[in-house]
Length: 460
Image 1 (cartoon, rainbow, N blue to C red):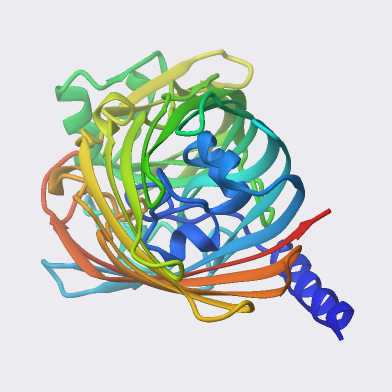
Image 2 (spheres, one colour):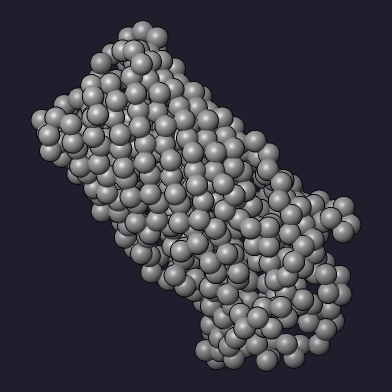
């Protein structure tokens, strides 16, 4: 019977992992790593969340009993997005219009070896992402200048994959330290339509340059410009690059029932994302004029994060954990710098889209109750300040939810094998933006979502 349970759980995970691997919450960040953390509101700094601890505070890997662990799992997010033009009342919904649209799936793989005072681990996790697709027939595909229905698809997709190599060491019976060095892969798909008014505002602010600019501005009745790069696959992006990241952490046992934890995740250092692209000039008289070339996203990084947490065992069955995070978005998402180089001529266009993301505070609290040897139940609350200023809101990057409630459970087949599952609901959040250059018409974006996480862990 146990073999049957394992086969069913593993089969479900394999099916899930064939899906699209991207999500978004807390700006581009998931609220936690793995179902144990997500079920407890995203807490992880001072509590045993299993092998996924290598992604939050590697020092917690020593909380696991001695043994060799293998984990396979997946995270899923289904988002509900509605963009409204507050000038006309028209709406655009992000449904299943293409492969850049959700629901989104992120993989979890981990291998941990734990013995005496040391723990070693390696894994693969999708850590950051955003994605949406509005199709070709909404008001987002129409220019405000000359009211041209372009028939161009408006979409985005970001995926950041993290492969950590982690180590943790129990210095004393109370103090544990840990760290990881990560290989980081970032990929992007994008279908971005800019109205002529937006192009003019970017030029006036010194955010638009290159040899292609005079030629494009000289096109009769220029109504907009469209940048498109899309790999057409269920995962990844047409523009991508590898880089490095990492984190450090420690835990300290104040007493047998209370632990504190600190962790610092470094800002990623990923090379410029590059790939094949098309730049299209939209003319009210000549139609769409495409130019083929290559695109480059310069210095597109994920932010540094500081986390402090505490966990306390009120009884041998009931535990509460609390985490505080400071996410330094302002150092990573001030501008998105995009460059296009035309084939043949080598002429370039460079633009810097102002995002001006803010540093945010994130608060998480979660509780766990071990009902019996087989069942454990969890619940939590997660709140993050809004990273996106209204003036930086774009319909294709609606990473706006801030408040989540979570719940989860574990079923242990025995001491060496278990399945964990968690659900998180992000309450609807609405932001508005009526200013150039990030939008040409005043918009209101409503965004809510449901997330799920499932993992199977085996100890050998």
